[in-house]
Length: 217
Image (cartoon, rainbow, N blue to C red; front, side, top):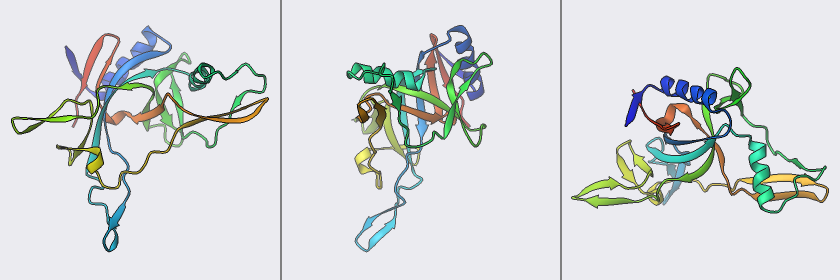
């Protein structure tokens, strides 16, 4: 049975979870987000304003790892690929500085959250993807769209729209791990995705044997 709670209440429950079971943990989270779209699209006359701009939202349900060390997780991925991370010269190479920092509790333990470096009031879930639940599919039942997927797009917040029908959806760039060691510099496509989600987009959460539905305005 799902508990209906406010966003603040579920955040407090997550912090209590860190107290009860510190260290790496696993949550199932469902978010609504606004995907970035190109502002303009190609038209017969050249370019025109993207008619889908500001009208698309995405609902995604994920199983994620939280309270983890990014560097340790990246090392494990490299070690699984045969990279010797014990090389004295081994170190990660970062091409840009992170815009957010992990949030720790009063005892210095990692939590499921991070904050924006320039504005600590902006709080995000800091997660490692383990998998998206179900493929993106929608079927018709008695003339009504039935969402079987746990990852889908909405037009104007109510009508299901297929990803390929969304105008101005940019191509995603590959995420890579870069490092150097005694043999030189290296780069590898990431198999495990690390990302952030604004806490304000949370719809549902499951962790510690409890399920939560978030009250939204």
